[in-house]
Image (tube, rainbow, N blue to C red; front, side, top):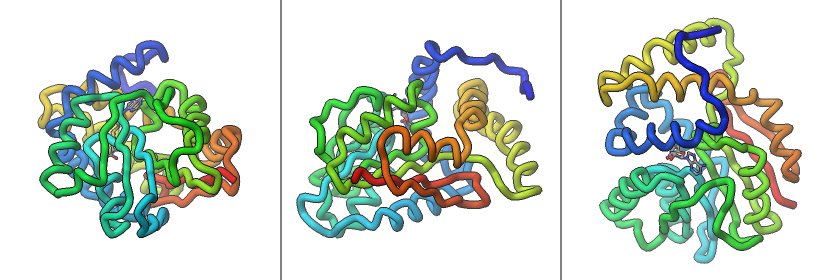
Length: 245
Ligand code: SAM
């Protein structure tokens, strides 16, 4: 299907993604609530419940494409403020909003913010107990490279969790979702940020992202064991899990 906007070549992709998030950083959190009708909070809570962070000092996690900190804050809180989480993002504007929110929540001691690319992580091998990424991996041009970096920096016994939009597997919901995402979301984007095109691109990137089974295969190919997934809201989002054993 063509929705009347241009296709984006791979080489151009990261630049476009960076522009989108620089533009929306300050309004990102409110946009998330509007566009997912609040559902992103439920999915993120479910992701943290699945992770079940250890309530131990020394428990170290990495949240990639961590943006304004939603996942990292939840992990630290769920660990009884014992975990240490590194929020990594390629975009300094998103991290700046995250750092400000962390200070307000008095969580700064448990967090650090690193500006870097998911395809080339500035950490040593076997460094983290868990690697999380929420609604970020579909923006990375080489997903297989990002997954092998995830594998590299995890400790043996470490856990990978990826929350991402996925293939809707419920009749009727899929039709509604198409309408919502292709018509409503770019319109909301335009209302709130004055520009629909970045949101058209983001919606397109959801459509291009591999479905549940294909993404599970990519995770296995990166070396992970016991790879499983759970659909949320009929598959609008899915949580993929894997272990470095
Ligand atoms: N995880 C946060 C959440 O769930 O609210 C933010 C998700 S936001 C939709 C996607 C994030 O991916 C943006 O902050 C963007 O800057 C980041 N990103 C895009 N490409 C990246 C890359 N190659 N490496 C690291 N982060 C990237």
